[in-house]
Amino acid sequence: MKTKEVINQILNRWDNVYWFLRMIISNDKYVAIGKESKLLITITSSLRLIAKDNRNRPEKSIIELQFKILRNILEERYKRAKSVQIRLERLITDLEKEIVTLDEMEVFILTCESAMIPLNQAIENIPSDDKKFTEAIAKSYLDVEGEKGLATVINLWDDLGVRGCLTAERIEIVKAFTTLRGLLEREFKMSAENQNVVLTAFTQEFERRAGQKRKQRAGGSLEDVTSFLLKYYGLKSAAAPDHFQSDIEVDNWVKTKDGWLIGISCKRTLRERWKQVSSAESTILSKFKIKQIYHVITYDEDLSDDKITTLGAHRHIFYLPDNSRRLIYAQQHLGLMDYVRPISEFINDLKRQV
Image (tube, rainbow, N blue to C red; front, top):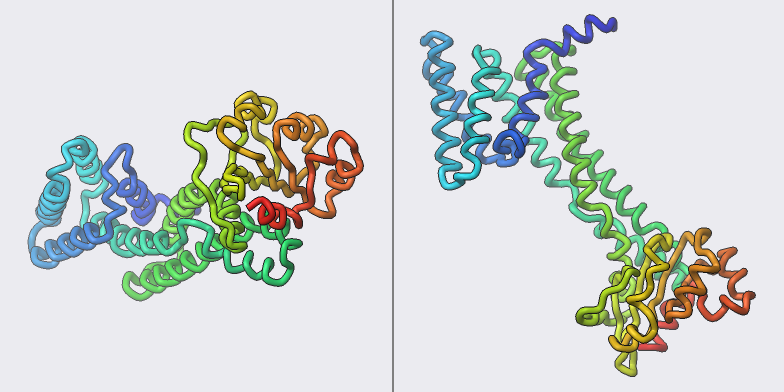
């Protein structure tokens, strides 16, 4: 298809589906009415009823009535929300600029009814966290491989969750896309070119919102793995010591049999401000009755001798994959051997302490 033909195709009235989607979901410039599916149903059914009951009126008169009912519905819905009045007025005003014919109003109705509402449902069906996809598989690894599977579980934890959620996204968009395409063919008798304009607008907005949900999920997974491991092995987590602050991030705590604490940090790599350990010196750790900090690290090539000795001198122990080159090297090094352990011994070491 030539460039000019593509431009002409997306400049037709159905291209407004994309812009209407962006308008009604925006919470910065406008009020995000698009997030409220029940409100959209009220709006679209009212707009259709006005058009049906006044079909003998002039087109301009019908549009005026439709905007009157739209304004009344929105003002009633947001009458107690004084902070949104400016954005609400801006939304109505800008919609009035975009919708001047009944055909354009039909595009707006379709956008709300057949694109945004199914899109809301699809986004809602995507998991908000990765744990449901990871815990069952992680448990299977540990059931079969025992402590030797710890490194595998920690490495896969994020990947399994991401893959599971992305699979859920694919399922939802395929379902919604198929339903919308069938509707455009059957109800609107839309040409293939116009279908492409609407469907790509839907897909573009779906991907934008799904991407936002991915960002919300990101970052917490490796914190979850420590809680999962403690629960799996029946080790009770403890509260963090009051007012303790460290430059090293600790994901979880356990209380030892002598009443002290061990902090646990599960990370792929040690990227924290590891040299700034002044707040985690041995005297400070003793003040808060912290016995040691255990670091479970799966990608350890950047774990230098300096990192190991500097933190190791302040009661930090590093658990590295059993077949790790760095582990084998450190275990044979007099200055490092006291600060490194194989991951397969991580749980056994904790059990002995607890």
